[in-house]
Amino acid sequence: MLIGIVGWRGMVGSVLIQRMLQEEDFNYFETRFFSTSNVGGKVPETIQFRGSRVLADAFCEKSLADCDVILTCQGSEYSRKILPSIQSKGWNGFWIDASREFRMQDDTTIILDPLNRESIETAIKNGKRIFCGGNCTVSCLLMAIHGLVKNDLVEWISSTTYQAASGGGAKHMKELLNQMGKIYKCIDTSLSQDNFNILDIDDSVLNTQKNFTAEELSCFNVPLAGSLIPWIDQDRNDGWSLEEWKGDVELNKILNLDQEGIKVDFTCVRVGIMRCHSQSVILKLKQKLEIEDIQRILNEANPWVEVVPNKKAETEKRLSPLYTSGTLKIPIGRIRRLNYNDLCISAFTIGDQLLWGAAEPLRRMLRILCDENFAEEF
Ligand code: HSE
Image (cartoon, rainbow, N blue to C red; front, side, top):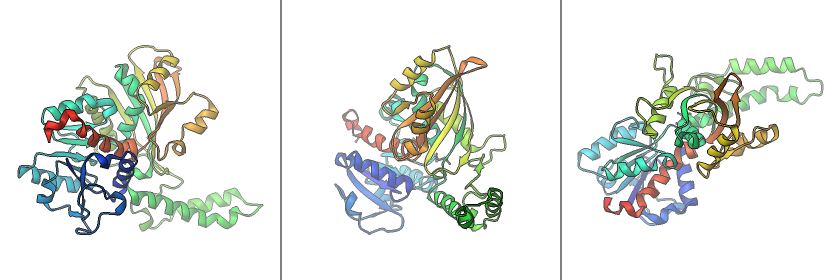
């Protein structure tokens, strides 16, 4: 099986390669690395396994069409240009895509195999060829509430998110850090004085934030450091942002639920965090359950979810982006019944948006295709 990988140098692509190395995925197939900017260059030694050691041209359709599977983290524009074109020339391989380009098409499957492995396998057997990673917020939430969803216990979900800068991309992370640095520089001297005046310092901070240059705001448009932005992605002009709309439609598509599916409403907020998306969630359950039973159901659902007891010390330690960052852990805590509705519970959950939110479902899809059940597909 020959796998073509495109966009492996970007942020999601780099996390993907890290994970593939950790899991020794490269032993399972031959790999051809594609490039849009360094065609003919050398494949870095760290990822030279089976396959060519020379970077192929990401726009060479002939070279792409040799591959049984193409996995792309190159972005929507690339997908939009390449996939229809190679398919129209007869390529019938598997297309695994980190972008949102084809996610909501009827013939595609959004991949989150701990929850929808069956749908993925059915799609492969039915000749479907396009498999897309889901929106990061949705994937991380579903990993957390897997147990309740699997047992058909959820009527509706309301989630307010705290989304990291990484959701926008590498440049957005850099912009956040530059803003933080500039704020610090303006108060560095005042902070080190014993008789500091906090109101003067606060004034300086505000003044710096309000006077960032256009260049310092080129990604987020407004300051993020020391502030937040309760709008992510495009304005749909119906009261919801595109990110919030995706929450509803993608969650139900992953679970293969139709109109009668789970009702979902998100309020998506960007905060000054590096790479973990957090969410404060309210779930309306279909039946009243004891909190201990809810915790057990959540904990048993998959190996990554971690129920954090609703206690101060454990919450501070384990229910945090710092604890979660760079890991596959999905902590969920602050689980309690709402005091005005017995069927509603609230919870707080966190996931690394570059791992379960992006790279991990993609590499797991590659491994699913290596399964002997699908040998005849190649
Ligand atoms: N759209 C998400 C965000 C990231 O901006 O945080 C990718 O799903």
